[in-house]
Image (tube, rainbow, N blue to C red):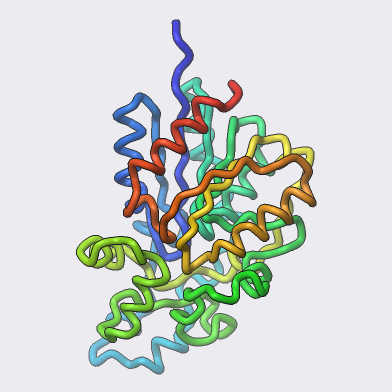
Length: 288
């Protein structure tokens, strides 16, 4: 009897939801892999928008100051949610490959630290892979991230709002152009409109300010991979490489590096190429 193929747990990034993985998940499943793509707490079906977002007439000042309904959502809540999905995936009897995109890297790092024995590999897709004691926010403020366009999208003061807020439904052409350039530079206009319509507006501060607690003995025991996106304007390539170097120095071992000549969203612009990298990782991963 042949070994079961790997199960993938695919974790989306900030403001996004599970739908970003649809093109990749369908390819994985067509090739015999199981694919689980949950909505994180506060995202997708779990997202709650501030009342000012839909109030008419729209009040920009109210939108920039209203406290977020997800302000009290913690990183631990997201970690626990993904651990539950990892356990569900592991129950199938195969290997579990955990993948985190962008800010989802903070969640998959925490999950790998908590349940390293459940994982055969962890994959960061242009993700925030930060060393012990650092946070997403501290890494975003590093000089290697200076060219990141994402912060230019932020609306209001996160300390007041309790979240980092964007306005994906804005009709302002300059704002929408910046949104596309930040996340979807190599995605068609039609695909961009579909993707932007799925975005929620608030990312809770908990995920941005909670320090990484990864250790060599737990997180470091899981083979780790990083998929660099060379044309990324949300997590610039210099920042990606800086994070890889920092974690390798702090945790030990070497991150296995893969590269795509893509924007921040290769699951939309290059799903076949991304699938191939993920399938190769799964097929080379040790049996759990």
